[in-house]
Every structure is written in C-alpha cells, then in structure tokens.
Image (cartoon, rainbow, N blue to C red):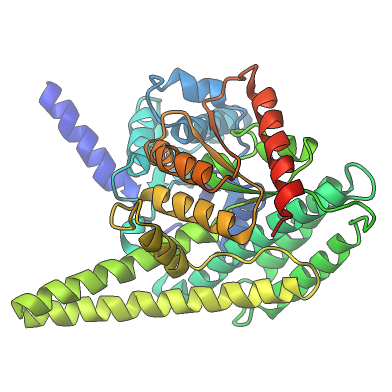
Amino acid sequence: MKKVYQLDTFRAISERVGQFNVQGKRFLIPEMNRIGAHLLAGVFRSFGINASVMETYEGLDLGKEFTSGKECFPCVVTLGDILLFMKKERERLGNRFNPENYVYFMPESDGPCRFGMYNKYHRIVLDTFPDLDRVKIASLSSEDAYSLDGLIPKEKMRDFRKAAYLSMVVGDILDRLLWKIRPYERDQGMADKFIDETMGRITESFSKHSCEKSPSGILNDLVEIVREGKGIIDPDIPQKPLIGVVGEIYVRSHLKSNQDTIRTLEKFGAEAINASIAEWVNYTTYDQVRLAKIAIRLNLKKFRLKEIKESLLRYLKYNLTLFHQYRQQTKAYRMARNYIDIEEDHKIGHLDKVLRKNNTFSFEVGTEACLSISAALECAHMGYNGIVNIFPFTCMPSNVTSSIAKPLMAKLNIPYIDVSYDGSFQPGREAALRTFMYQAYQHFKSHGRA
Ligand code: SF4
C-alpha cells in the first residue's frame, strides 16, 4: 500500500509540476519583491495570459500549519500564499470553483540547496486537499537558465523572454529609485506614496507594450517616472552612510518576510541598496556558459567530437543570451541614470573575478553564496560603509556567506551584520541594527562613502 502511495506521489510530481501551456488558465504568481512580480504579471497579460500576483504573507499561519518547521522560510511563506488564495477562491466561487482553471507558478533551481524542492513539496501539500490535486504547478529551472520551453508558444517565446527579463530590470531600477529618494525625501511618506502610485502606471505599461517588438514604450514611461521621482529629493539633506544588502534572494527582497529591514536601516540613518533580482537571472545564464566551457575542455581532452559540438553550441547559445540580457539591462540603467545617480548592477563575470582574486570561495561551489560573498567584497572595495546579510533562518548558502564574509569584512574594517528571519519577531533586532548603523556612521565619518 505504501509503495502505491509513493508511486502516485512521484507521478504527481512528474505529471503536475513542470512546463505547461498556460493559455486560458489563471496564472498565479507569488510576490517576491514588491514591484517585479507585478511587472511580470503585466508581461504575461500582454501575451494573452491571465496572470495575477497573489496576496502575500497573509496565509503564513496556513503555511506553518502544513510544514514541520524544518523547511526554508520562503517555502513556508509561498505555501501559505497559494493555500490562502485557493481557500478564498473556493469561498468566493462556491460551486463554480474549478481548480483546473489555475496554474500556480513556482520556479526552481538545481544545485546544493533546497529551492528545487519547494514546488515538489507544495505539490504534495496541495494533493492533500480535496480537488487541489488538479491545480497544476508551472515550473522553470535554473538548470537551463529558466528556459520558457512549453510555457509560452514557441513563436512568441523570444519576445516574451525579452519582456520578462526587462520586467525584472525595471523592477530593480524602481526599487533602487525608492532607496535613493526615500532617505532624502522632502516630506515623510512622499517616496512611498510616489512608488505606490507609479507601480500601477508601469504595470499598465508592461501589460500594454510587452508584446511589441520595441521596448521603447516601457522605457519612456520608466524615464518619466524616474524624472518625477528625482523631484522628491530634498537637496539640503546631507549624504548618509551607504549600506549594501546581500543575502538570500527571496527573504532579502520580500518586505514582509524581512520585516522591512531596509526601512529600519533608513530609520537609523542609512541609504541602503539591496542586491538586484536580475543578478540571479544573469548568474544562472553565466553559470551555463561556465559549465559549457568546462564541458568543451573535457570533451576536447577526450576527443569526443559529437559532445564537443554539443557543448560548443550550448556555450554559444548561453553566451548570446547573456549578451542580450546585459545589453537590455545596460540600456535601461543608462536611461534612468541620465536623471538620477542610482547604482548600476555588477556584472557576474566581474564578481567571479573578485572571488578568484580573493580566493576564499568559488563559483565552482555555486549557490547564492558566491554572489553574496563577492558582492560584499565589491561593495567594500567601492567604499560602502557597511554590509547587511539578510536570509532565512537555517539557509545553507547564507550561513556559508556569513562564515566567510564576516571575517573578510572584519579584516577590511567594514561593519557587517547577519539578520535572519523565520516569521518571529526578535526583541533585540532593532537594537542590533541600530548598533550596526552606529558603526557604519563612524566608518562614514572617517572614510566618506562611495
Ligand atoms: S537558498 Fe537558502 S532558503 Fe533558499 S532554498 Fe536554499 S537553503 Fe533554502
């Protein structure tokens, strides 16, 4: 009997987690950073897919009820999001509720970490509810740099991919705009109000223009927003210490999970910049190029002609993808930077070099640790006044980051703090962040800033 159950479980995972055609379905996107998920939903809508972003964090109790406490915190939060959404839909629609009308989006990544298991675990939990076994889970994997095969019709895939990537870059730029203007706003609350209002505008722009060949409609709207945003800055407010935020992508970007750490840092006198979302996508593409290079070398050594050709094609494909990503990203940042001095994104190849030079960790090991450690080093070299590592409690790559970055930052005399989250409120957290900001301010006074 047990054997049958296990076989069914595996079948459910292989048949109902994967890449499906989502035309005609309601496509449900979990919120990660405040803006990016909504822009991505706009891109899907522009291509005729009924996508929406689920309310987030309100279902945390449900997420906790169906996990054991050992799972990664983002897995718990997103599980709560989908369970609460389904519960509300069932209540709203009554007999008309049909689980087959929904596809839940949960990407994954390979490598020595648990993100690849979220969608499988969510599948198992959904299957325990009446009818929810019929909700499909759409997944993309970092194993092929988040290829969209199967999710979007082939003829539209190229344009969709470009627009989806742009949505991430624009989300990053608007986040950076907020972090640039909020610490220097003329009146308290202006920056938040402005970003809340513009979110609707730029989402609308993505819904309207993403399917067009040229992104100029979106980029013009972005420039307009950046110009307006700059007007919020009070030029009489003196510069503040600059803090770099690194860490696990979900929790460092998800405001409710990280209890809005950046706002707390700002309360204690910081200007802070979080690592971007596009960084992760660029990294997965870069990693495919790196792996293809290794495969070419190995196959050449063994003189395996067919494999040499395959790895060469793979190398060219991902190199070209990376080139296009960087080109899109550079163009969007350049347009925004014509009006306001937001920080540009690091190139992944540069971060790889930073790590090689420092020789304390390696891209060979993978995971976000290689990005977080190299980004912390890069921020230190650029003249930031402090580094914050934000991550889910028990996150493996982030603990690796902590064990390596903390002594490195101490050696470089850069204030550093780890802040981990699991949904509970720690009474000493604000005091710790305030102490960190005191140190960052001393660093700022004696060294200036980037
Ligand atoms: S990065 Fe951390 S939180 Fe995310 S899946 Fe891996 S171990 Fe879990």
